Each structure stands twice: as structure tokens, then as C-alpha cells.
Amino acid sequence: MKKQPIKLHNAWGHLRTVHRHRKEVMKNCFRAGIPLQGLLHDLSKYSPEEFINGCRYFQGSRSPHEGERDDYGYSLAWMHHKGRNKHHFEYWTDYNKVTRKMTPTKMPIKYVKEMFCDRMAASKIYMKDSYTDASPLGYFRKGNAASRMHPETAAIIEKLLVMLSEKGEEATFAYIRRMK
Image 1 (cartoon, rainbow, N blue to C red):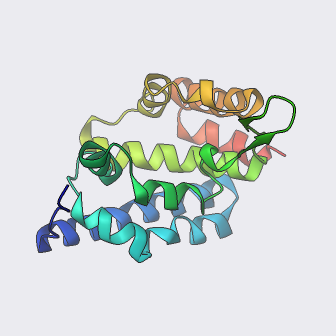
Image 2: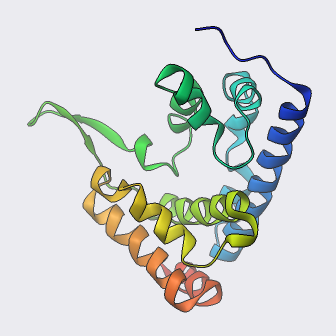
């Protein structure tokens, strides 16, 4: 299959979306008490492996990875991204010597916090004016991500997303700052 051409307006749109997303995650991470993770969040999106395909498949309403998957059935940019960013649960899989299968492992809490900040920010960026505090929880449940995570990790992120949905940002970030 022939690669999509890079259009200047798509490159500009992708760059703006990445900057807006990182800014929103950074704000969330500061509120969550993990400022360094906010500053370093998703820097791999500027690497050629991710940025070029991000420009090529930019749509503005969903992740460019989805467009790349539409064309190829997989996303090389996503595989690069998830392998370098510990706030993605997909990073936390390893070979289980007993089952001889790839198995989810429990995520350290600092990355679960960042994952929460990332999911909330992504929902705000892509949903724009239709975003509500219930949006990240709806996306999480619709994607069935919990079935692919370590059970303890899934329970923590779902608890935080339910809390956001029911109690709002202030209460949820106050809770996150106290988590160890």
C-alpha cells in the first residue's frame, strides 16, 4: 500500500494537537503532584518514527494511530510510542515463564497517575466542547482496556476515572496527590 502524503495543514494540525495535549497533561500532572512526569510526558511524539506518521494520518478528531491502522492493520508509530512511555499499560507486559504468554504486569503508581492525567487530557483534546468529567471513564470502558491490564492496575485507574465522573477534578486530584 502506498504511504499517505504529508500535507502541510496536517503537519501543522498534528503539531498543534501534540502541543495542546502535552500542555493539558502537564497541567494535570502538576495538579497530581508529579510535575517531572508532566514535563517529560510524550516527548517521543517528536521523534521521526512518531511525528512523520502523526502528520501523515492527522485527522483532528481521533488519534493518527487509528488512521495508520485503517491503512495497514497496525500502527508502527503506536508500537514505537507504547514501548517508550511507561504511562501506557501496554508497556507493562512481559513474558510469563509459567504460562509462556505475554502477561500484563502491575504498573507503578506514579505511572498510573500519569495514565490518568493522559486519559483525561486526551478526552478533553479530542472531544472539545462535548467533554464531561464522565468522558474518560466512558472511553476506558468502551475500549475494554481493563481486560488487558494487570487487575490491580485496572482497579486503580477505574477507581480514579469513576471518582472523576462522580466527584469532579478537584476531589480526584486531591485524592491522587495522597496516593502512595
